[in-house]
Length: 401
Ligand code: ATP
Ligand code: MG
Image (cartoon, protein in one colour):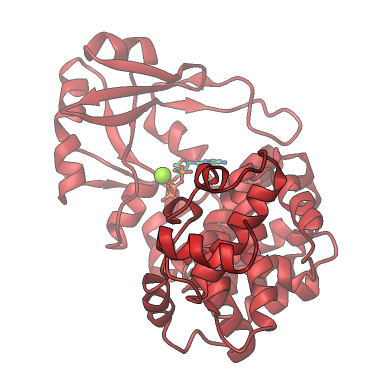
């Protein structure tokens, strides 16, 4: 058994000693069998949340209504979810109410895909009631049970299925794919935040292009925020080599494929996806500097300075990707150039507003900002050394003070 599981073994043992069952479940078991990096370890147990809390001295209630308790163990935290079923589904969303059960099989049955519905016991034995291992071999994403029913219970599963195409490079099994086609409109019932979380995972997967193609094939894209009629943009996006891009850069490319370049339009689009103000600002800046980059033969000192390094690198990567289909030339030359800038921010300027006031008889006012901006530009362009005395003399010579 590999390390993350080994470290969590005492937890399984402790639960069993108390007379209950406990297993590793879900994504960690899947990724372990695929021999890929495990994200987080989920544990399922026949003990109820209250019973789990009675076993461990340090726990946090993270989602007790849904049966999840967080156990703090050797400075690590583990989520333990009680075996449960979700028999009543309201309005195609996650159930409001869950029912705790004592059988593992019942718990595995409510899970989305067969590859996610396996358990592993403390000896590394795999429990696989729904042929998950077979699906792993076939590289297939297949719902546990009837796809129509499963997507009608929780329509987010359609998104999840396609995001596993992106992260695992699997195919969606035929009936499951048909289930997505037949139930696509139910995605509109799902909270945007949940859709965004899955879409961002989709964007970050190695097989993102394949997943985007399936978005088009199933027409599920029509129920994504602001993408109702974005077939062309999505297929354009699918043709690009996106793997070398970071998440905000991918959002920027999607927007450019949509022809959305204007600051306000970008905000409206990303707000619909409920992205944070910080994320929105980053994407706005990246797009602004891609547009600037199109007007310049190369990065000027001014442009680099005002863009800041990370935004300039993002903009350059996308600029190259859109023009050459590939990020080919060396991005590190931008870093080199940036390092050589005489100053990196206004704060590093050798003079301040107070200096200007001391050197003149003038009253404080907007002129200070204007003069400082002028000096800042000259210093960045290396037309003026960043030296207090030399700046003062230059300002006097140009009758600025
Ligand atoms: P990742 O590696 O991205 O974390 P994961 O499969 O672990 O993938 P999670 O969202 O962490 O995905 O969910 C953990 C497990 O919970 C899944 O493997 C699956 O068994 C179950 N699950 C999650 N979401 C759903 C859902 N909407 N419907 C049914 N089962 C779900
Ligand atoms: Mg997980």
